[in-house]
Structure formats: structure tokens, C-alpha cells
Length: 104
Image 1 (cartoon, rainbow, N blue to C red):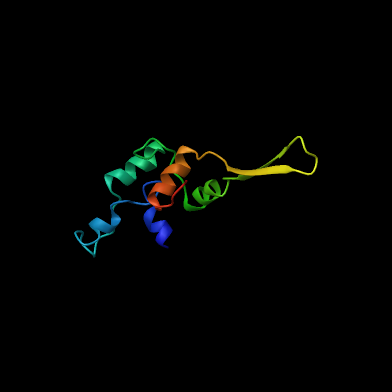
Image 2: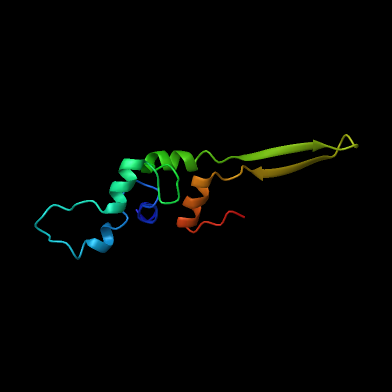
């Protein structure tokens, strides 16, 4: 739940819901904020990224890979291994920022 709470800027969720919860009338149905309506109609976040559902965002974050590269040296008994993470997409980079995850 804490991840979902940090990610509303990338999701169809209303970012202002928490702030407006105490200001609105509890007996009337809650109406989406202007920013939520904008995301719904344009399909883009304020940063210009495509708005995601929570499941599609998790699938996108799960597509990052760690590649293992093996180099042969002049000596037959010696091999060098390095591991390299794939580059972050702009969406992944923004999600990592919102979740306070270091990338390097």
C-alpha cells in the first residue's frame, strides 16, 4: 500500500484526494480533481509520461534486466564477468524517484 500511495502522479489515481478529503462535504459524492480529469482525458501525466494502471506500472518496472557479460581473455583459464543493468526508461526513472529508490 505504501508503494501505491507514493505513485499517484503516474497512475490514474487522484493525486489531490488526500488533501481534499477533509475539505469536502462527507455526504456528497467525491468528485475528481482537475488534475485527475486531465490525466483521464489526455492519458498523460504532468511530466508528459503515459498514465498507467498500478498493474501495468508494476509490469513495466519488472522489465528491467541485469545482463551478464563474459569476456574471454588471452589465457584459456581466465574469464572476466561483468554485470550491467539495463538503462531506465523515463517512466521507470520517475517511479524510482517517487519511491526513493537509488538507481546507482
